[in-house]
Image 1 (cartoon, rainbow, N blue to C red):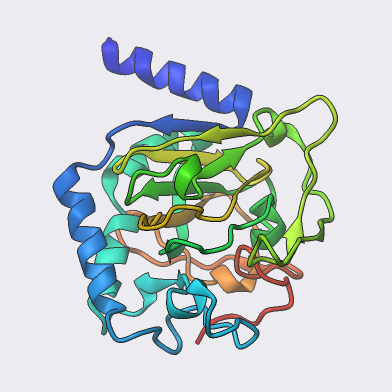
Image 2: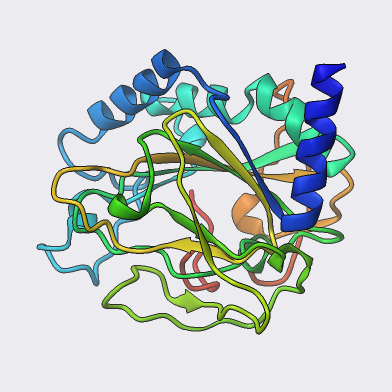
Length: 273
């Protein structure tokens, strides 16, 4: 009965706010292992084809040394590949996602953010601007690999924005954000911080306005493993997310949507090889 009550409360919060936090979903040893494997993979610097290397970043930019990884689960020849696939398809996530979608979830993306001290943030945005899921929307899964708070550039979210349509973004301030899109907080809604402990997971739907600010700490990374999911009834999806997986490892085919691209870059970006 306690499990049913917790599930009902979680679903109600997700429906109301567009997001929900599940505390301690992953144990400390699991999170420590994720952190260690991803840091070891990056010990010699960014890896072509795996990391989001941006030629327009100055050499002094912390993100030039520590860019995010895109689709690490597709790089099975590297240590991060099998681990990213395992994390993305973890059965604990499946049960929650099935509850939130009301149907079978399919995994379509993995990412890893390092966000070292001094790194810029990711401006407010809506994920379904990039995924282009039809009908319905996607759900993001954000696993805190370090404690994430206001001091090291933790998440901010706009409760209630999950009921919005996806809007056309404005241009972000490049001095504070490494991404190019900005979505303003609508009248009547408020941006709030979401502080997470390592092992906590935030689930949020594709219309929710969310982002993060620069990491102002002197010595704290704000690492996170992120994956995105779509309902099995999806009929269109941006080509960047072109290999959907069910939680038993089977691949699926979904027709390409028009536009879209990786979260937090210009929508004309090409799909990875």
